[in-house]
Length: 477
Image (cartoon, rainbow, N blue to C red):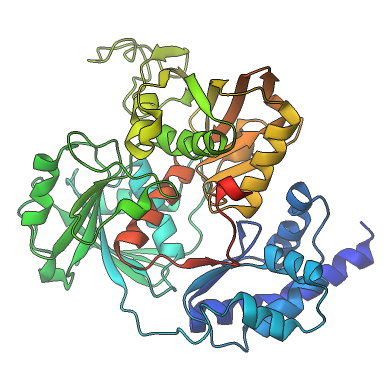
């Protein structure tokens, strides 16, 4: 790319930044390029997002096409929404129209004139480990939107330096990098100030005894990321606290708890549901892909093998562990273990009841995992048709926030750190022979899963933005 062309793109991107900020602050509008979020993006980020579009649509997206769209969006009376500039641009080109304003008014008619004074819903993180801290980062990045807001974290106190250490772990992350913003500790009031937002740190060993109303927190959604309780009885302890209205578990729920995979069965969430589960990272990664291929081709049965990064419940060196094999050194061994993800799929997709088996291999990497879906299909399939279909699903279906697609001979696990989709299909690795299909699905088992959790939180709060332009259901792609 010639330097003068690069400079021209950067200049246009710089002009776009304040417009995107205005849409975010004044209209509660999130923007993206084929799923690549432009929230708080730098000029370079914007240029990269436009260039990345070539992997999806086949050609690089010109800023000269999206800039007029962004300008026009700021003149419309838009309400809360998530708007894909890449898809809008492609549709405008395909329409043959030269009247951009009329086109946008037609495409976005549902959300024009819907601005409201929606009051943010309070969120409390019960636990502040790997998932808890990533949930905090995502919530803080969304703090400027009128949706959900992080108010507090609840932890057990570990000494006099606890508050500083909690803030330090939020500030620095060996996998996901530095916190994007500023952090300050108020030890007198047990508050962590993050980008101007006060996060109350509450010390408690008993979820039933916390009075959140003392901190001005009311009707809060508590996200329990400790994994300590996984059934209705245990999680109901949160509902005994003053100021709590709902509970979400970041682990597979037991008993009669609804296990929600956002994008698949989130519409089953009812206003009366007080306790829900966000299932597991692996279940979230594979269920959308399984639904997509089953809707189009039909799946008779299959086996799921997950190659999973080690987690905090394993030992760094050989030591006693109640789980089989998990006591062996996590950073030195591949550890064969069990996974309930294959069976858990049927909780979100009943049509898969009894169709899947599964195992897991824990490997010496700290993040990003892979699921290998070995499937017997209802009919013969080809590699090309499956890949093209899943590529289109990742771009133009209602599952585009859950399913990603990549077709590169160079990618490795580290390239997927920080991805927001639940799972990304590796098209180059797809194998098809007759009615036998093998799919390889990458997933950031920390950050991708955390984004799925936040999507459920927003849905529970009635604050989940609708995505525009509207796209077809998967089976219609």
